Each structure stands twice: as C-alpha cells, then as structure tokens.
Amino acid sequence: MLMNLKRRTLGLAAAALLVAGPALADTSTVKILVGFPPGGGTDAIARVLADKLKDQLGANVIVENRAGAGGQLAAQALKAAPADGTVLFLSHDHSISILPLTLKNPGFNPAEDFVPVAGFATFVNGLALSGGTPARSYQEYLAWVREDVKKRGTVGVPAPASTPEFFVKVIGQKNGLDLQAAPYRGSAPMMGDMLGNQIAAGVGSVPDFIENHKAGKIRIVAVIGGKRQATLPDVPTFTELGLTGFEDLPYYGLFAPKGTPKATLERYSAALAKVIALPEVNERLTAMGLTVGHMSAEQLAGRERAYSQTWARIIQASGFQAQ
Image 1 (tube, rainbow, N blue to C red):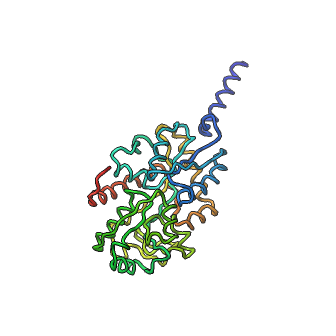
Image 2 (cartoon, rainbow, N blue to C red):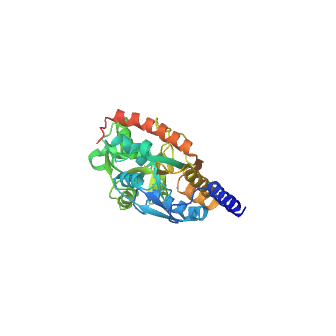
Image 3 (tube, one colour):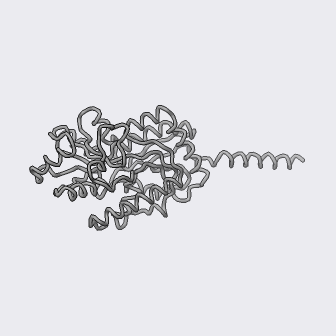
C-alpha cells in the first residue's frame, strides 16, 4: 500500500512537471544572442524584452552581443548552442533570410539548424539624410546628388550584402544615378558617421533612425511599405514616390537551436506574447518604429519564407553573385 502510494505521488509530480513545461537545463539563465553591437536598434529592442521576460520565465535573461558579419557570428553561435532553451537568437530579416542568399557558406542553414520561437514585430527600412545635407525631401536629395554624383552619391548601409545595400542599388538604377553603398559593421557606427556629417545619407531600419530623427539630428525622407508609419505620418513611402516592389515588410523574431523541445518553445512564445502586450513595452517598441504584434512559430516561419522569396528575386535581378 505504501509503495503504491509513493509511486502514485511520484507519477503525479512528474505529470505536474510536464504540464508546467520542462525546466531550463541546469541553469537559471537564458541568453539572448544579438548579432549587432550595443547602441543599435536591435540591441535596444533585445534589452527591452529581456528586462520583462525574466519575470515571465522566472529566470535571469541576459543579452549577449556577438557582433560581426551582419549577424553571421551570432547565428553560428546559435547553431553551436545546446538545444535546451538556454540560448536564443533575437534577429531581424538580415541574418535569417538574407545571409543564406548572399553567402555560399554562411556556416548555418536556418531551415536545418534553427526553429522559430515566435515573432513580435515588423518594421520598415528608410532613407535618412544627415543633418548637414541640405536636401529636405527624397526628391531634393536626388536632385542634390545629381549635381555631383561622385562626391555626393555614397550612401551608408549597416552591413554588406544587406537589403539596404541592394535597395541603394535599386534607387540608383531607377533614377539613373551611380549610387555607391558604403557598408558598416552595424547601424551604430553608421549613425556615428551620419551624426558627424561624414556621410550624407544612409539606408537602414527605422528603429535605428527614429531617435535621432525625432531629435532633428537626421531626417528620414522615405520608407518602404504599403502605407505610412504611425510614428512617421509625414514621411512618404517609396511606393508613393514611384518606387514599387518593396511593400513586403521585414520582421523581428526569436529563434532557438533545432531540437529544442516543443514545450519549451511554446512556453517562450507565450511569455513573449505577454511581454509585448504590456502597455509600457508596447509603447516603447512602437516609439522605436516597430509595428508590434505576436506571431506564432508557424506564422513567423511563413513570413520568413515569403520574405526570402521576395528578396531572392531582387538579389538575382541585381546581378549579385553569392560570395
């Protein structure tokens, strides 16, 4: 009788653990990898989420910057991480969708090495002008560059072979200008040169630009997407300006190593949904230029596939050869 009671008690305890979801390995720390330096938009977003996720998960959540190669180093680190829920990767489209299209051997395959946890936002890229650039609009900028393309036609981008770099090429082609993209190692150093008027313009994400735009230090003059952004109601879309084909929006999401238990992924997805629903988090992310909304793992995977297909066509049409 006593032995049966013990067995029943142990069985109930095990069932309770299964319902609650698996515990984190042998640590109370969850690490969120970020592929860009501190000070940029992606880093700021990760820290906002990490601060609140710790309460939802009952664990210490830290952000670790693995900057370099447009997020490639962070993606490789995720591939090598244990599939136990202790390491996640917060990434936007570049590392997950674009690097596999532009590198022959990126050192990871998202479809084989990663699993989506959940998405939490979409955003737009835009063209911003430095404070010392006299132009006040997209049309004025093109006219200003046309006067001296060799001196004025360089545009900063946060990473080589990124969507901003390809977008610079498209802007140039559509307007008969030989624009040259100047790749940086992240948005923070690009922004430093823009603030110092070392470069006249940059193409990057609105989350990277928004703070300095609001402060009047730079000017966002056009954004991608099918409609204007709520945080930038006076800034036209490229579609309005006659540059179509860029309505599919980039995304932000969390990814985990392939093999991470489904219950763990679902637990993290639910925690993320609760965090972005908090008014203070939602307002802060929105102020950064994000359109906040929870995407399930399946929805995030679908958005990633569609985005990759769109940019595969654009990259192929540009004549770019995978390096």
